[in-house]
Image (cartoon, each protein chain N blue to C red):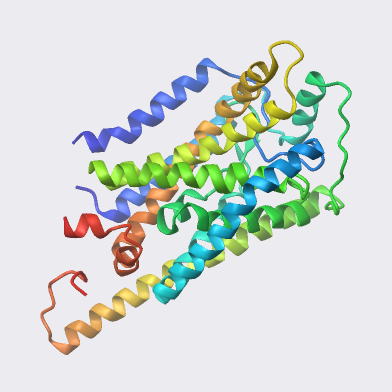
Length: 112
Length: 252
């Protein structure tokens, strides 16, 4: 039986492998985003269709767009990281308090 | 023992599958601004609204009953925020991103994620020109209604049948992600039926494109969701019991 840290490490490595596999093994891929291709696919089905509404605001350049995507990821990851640290710290403190109190509470938290 | 080999086998099977279907054009992401005819925009908004309202009520109820789970709600939102910002290369030679809504659906039920998913989509539509306001209804229905419903149903089914937790979580998150893009294909096919073959032909075309690109990303999302749920099971057991994500396992 692997420890949970080892298990999680393996899972995360699998995710990394899944992300990089195409970059290494798929030759000639452009790895473009979606949007132009969607346009082409729709136009090929219905050549007369014209988008009737435009984005209210568009990032002025690829750099700005990348910045905003990175910002989104950073905000999310920042909170996830904060949460994980908070939960770990809380659990540690609780078990420390229990051992200080000298109560042999070996039961799980169930039963409340 | 079989547990040890299940993931590598699954991944290997996936890889073989993709090698058989290389190099298709793909664009598995949200429907862009202006790319659904007006009547379909209205239709999908109408479908979305009841779920959004139910979600607000459901979140309110959950938080009032267990104020301790607010942080977890934040985590669910943040997880969806990170994952939907990650455009990851796929075996088809193009990029797409996971949705990250399976985690929240498992923890808080499907409609709660309609609210959080919708917020993520509004952010992306307004600041990133990714997706759109006219297509917000359609995109919310695919990513934040259908996806979470599938995830939630599969997770509950897994709990009922006594499947191992990692398996229920994996299937819930992976297939919820995948069904999001199946729904997107259906939405595009309904709006743009092929001149010959109609909706079915368009659906086949969009599906062939979407599903293949999304599969490895869906698997990634499934794996990451297992990591988070494992963590929560060891550090946030009490909250998971309050949300009856773990109750069955502990008391059965």
